[in-house]
Length: 153
Image (cartoon, rainbow, N blue to C red; front, side):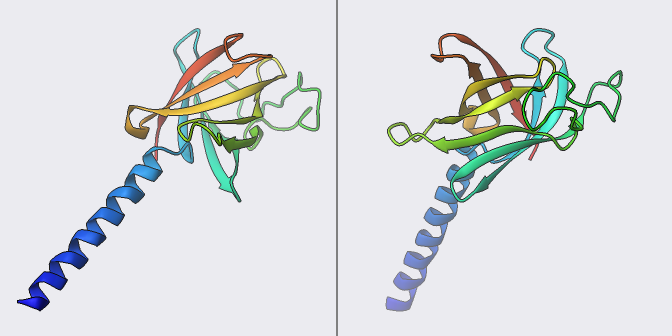
Protein backbone atom coordinates (compact mmCIF):
# COMPACT_ATOMS: atom_id res chain seq x y z
CA UNK A 1 0.00 0.00 0.00
CA UNK A 2 2.80 2.41 0.89
CA UNK A 3 4.62 1.70 -2.42
CA UNK A 4 1.38 2.54 -4.22
CA UNK A 5 1.15 5.92 -2.47
CA UNK A 6 4.82 6.70 -3.15
CA UNK A 7 4.43 5.77 -6.82
CA UNK A 8 1.37 8.03 -7.20
CA UNK A 9 3.12 10.88 -5.38
CA UNK A 10 6.14 10.61 -7.69
CA UNK A 11 3.91 10.46 -10.75
CA UNK A 12 1.97 13.53 -9.61
CA UNK A 13 5.23 15.42 -8.97
CA UNK A 14 6.56 14.47 -12.41
CA UNK A 15 3.36 15.61 -14.13
CA UNK A 16 3.34 18.88 -12.20
CA UNK A 17 6.95 19.53 -13.17
CA UNK A 18 6.31 18.71 -16.83
CA UNK A 19 3.26 20.98 -16.84
CA UNK A 20 5.18 23.88 -15.37
CA UNK A 21 8.03 23.40 -17.87
CA UNK A 22 5.57 23.43 -20.75
CA UNK A 23 4.01 26.61 -19.36
CA UNK A 24 7.46 28.22 -18.99
CA UNK A 25 8.27 27.46 -22.64
CA UNK A 26 4.92 28.83 -23.81
CA UNK A 27 5.43 31.95 -21.70
CA UNK A 28 8.85 32.63 -23.20
CA UNK A 29 9.75 34.42 -26.43
CA UNK A 30 12.51 31.86 -27.04
CA UNK A 31 11.91 29.90 -30.24
CA UNK A 32 11.38 30.29 -33.98
CA UNK A 33 8.84 32.90 -35.08
CA UNK A 34 7.18 33.80 -38.37
CA UNK A 35 7.11 37.59 -38.65
CA UNK A 36 3.99 39.19 -40.05
CA UNK A 37 4.17 42.74 -41.43
CA UNK A 38 1.76 44.95 -39.49
CA UNK A 39 0.83 46.94 -42.60
CA UNK A 40 0.56 44.41 -45.41
CA UNK A 41 -0.19 41.39 -43.15
CA UNK A 42 2.23 39.38 -45.31
CA UNK A 43 4.66 36.83 -43.92
CA UNK A 44 8.11 38.41 -44.00
CA UNK A 45 10.71 36.19 -42.34
CA UNK A 46 11.59 33.58 -39.77
CA UNK A 47 13.34 34.93 -36.67
CA UNK A 48 14.95 32.70 -34.05
CA UNK A 49 15.04 34.15 -30.53
CA UNK A 50 17.59 32.60 -28.16
CA UNK A 51 18.41 33.08 -24.50
CA UNK A 52 22.06 33.63 -23.60
CA UNK A 53 22.34 33.89 -19.83
CA UNK A 54 19.02 35.68 -19.38
CA UNK A 55 19.50 38.04 -22.34
CA UNK A 56 17.47 37.45 -25.50
CA UNK A 57 18.70 38.01 -29.04
CA UNK A 58 16.92 37.34 -32.30
CA UNK A 59 18.32 36.63 -35.77
CA UNK A 60 16.65 36.40 -39.14
CA UNK A 61 16.96 32.80 -40.35
CA UNK A 62 15.01 33.00 -43.58
CA UNK A 63 13.20 35.53 -45.76
CA UNK A 64 9.72 34.40 -46.81
CA UNK A 65 8.94 36.99 -49.51
CA UNK A 66 9.58 35.25 -52.87
CA UNK A 67 10.30 38.66 -54.44
CA UNK A 68 13.10 39.42 -51.95
CA UNK A 69 16.64 38.66 -53.08
CA UNK A 70 18.17 35.99 -50.82
CA UNK A 71 21.46 37.94 -50.64
CA UNK A 72 19.93 41.32 -49.71
CA UNK A 73 21.99 43.42 -47.28
CA UNK A 74 20.97 46.04 -44.73
CA UNK A 75 22.05 49.10 -46.74
CA UNK A 76 20.12 51.54 -44.55
CA UNK A 77 21.54 50.28 -41.23
CA UNK A 78 23.77 52.84 -39.55
CA UNK A 79 25.53 50.70 -36.92
CA UNK A 80 27.73 47.58 -37.11
CA UNK A 81 24.99 45.87 -39.17
CA UNK A 82 25.41 48.24 -42.15
CA UNK A 83 25.77 46.27 -45.39
CA UNK A 84 25.50 42.95 -43.54
CA UNK A 85 23.35 40.19 -45.08
CA UNK A 86 19.78 40.35 -43.80
CA UNK A 87 19.68 36.55 -43.48
CA UNK A 88 21.69 35.90 -40.32
CA UNK A 89 21.28 39.50 -39.11
CA UNK A 90 20.70 40.04 -35.39
CA UNK A 91 17.62 42.25 -35.21
CA UNK A 92 16.79 41.85 -31.50
CA UNK A 93 19.43 42.65 -28.90
CA UNK A 94 19.67 42.98 -25.13
CA UNK A 95 16.13 41.98 -24.14
CA UNK A 96 15.58 40.77 -20.56
CA UNK A 97 12.58 39.58 -18.60
CA UNK A 98 10.87 42.45 -16.77
CA UNK A 99 11.59 42.32 -13.03
CA UNK A 100 8.08 43.48 -12.10
CA UNK A 101 5.98 41.83 -14.82
CA UNK A 102 7.28 38.33 -15.68
CA UNK A 103 4.98 38.22 -18.74
CA UNK A 104 7.04 40.95 -20.46
CA UNK A 105 10.54 41.09 -21.91
CA UNK A 106 12.07 44.49 -22.62
CA UNK A 107 15.12 46.70 -22.12
CA UNK A 108 16.67 45.94 -25.49
CA UNK A 109 16.14 47.04 -29.05
CA UNK A 110 14.89 45.83 -32.39
CA UNK A 111 16.13 46.72 -35.87
CA UNK A 112 13.81 47.18 -38.83
CA UNK A 113 16.06 46.11 -41.73
CA UNK A 114 13.65 47.70 -44.23
CA UNK A 115 14.52 51.22 -43.04
CA UNK A 116 17.63 50.67 -40.88
CA UNK A 117 16.00 52.20 -37.82
CA UNK A 118 16.52 50.83 -34.31
CA UNK A 119 13.69 50.98 -31.78
CA UNK A 120 13.26 50.03 -28.15
CA UNK A 121 11.37 46.76 -27.95
CA UNK A 122 8.87 44.99 -25.75
CA UNK A 123 8.02 41.30 -26.25
CA UNK A 124 4.93 39.68 -24.80
CA UNK A 125 3.94 36.05 -25.47
CA UNK A 126 0.22 35.64 -26.18
CA UNK A 127 -2.30 32.89 -27.01
CA UNK A 128 -0.59 30.39 -24.67
CA UNK A 129 2.77 31.02 -26.33
CA UNK A 130 1.54 30.51 -29.91
CA UNK A 131 1.92 34.21 -30.70
CA UNK A 132 4.35 36.95 -29.73
CA UNK A 133 3.34 40.59 -29.48
CA UNK A 134 6.36 42.61 -30.63
CA UNK A 135 6.20 46.34 -29.90
CA UNK A 136 8.87 48.63 -31.34
CA UNK A 137 8.84 52.19 -30.04
CA UNK A 138 10.69 55.42 -29.44
CA UNK A 139 10.51 56.86 -25.94
CA UNK A 140 7.35 55.25 -24.55
CA UNK A 141 5.63 52.01 -25.68
CA UNK A 142 2.51 53.98 -26.65
CA UNK A 143 4.63 55.78 -29.30
CA UNK A 144 5.33 52.88 -31.59
CA UNK A 145 3.92 50.05 -33.63
CA UNK A 146 3.16 46.42 -32.97
CA UNK A 147 3.41 43.18 -34.88
CA UNK A 148 2.10 39.76 -33.92
CA UNK A 149 4.52 36.97 -34.74
CA UNK A 150 3.43 33.33 -34.96
CA UNK A 151 5.40 30.53 -33.26
CA UNK A 152 6.83 28.01 -35.71
CA UNK A 153 8.62 25.87 -33.09
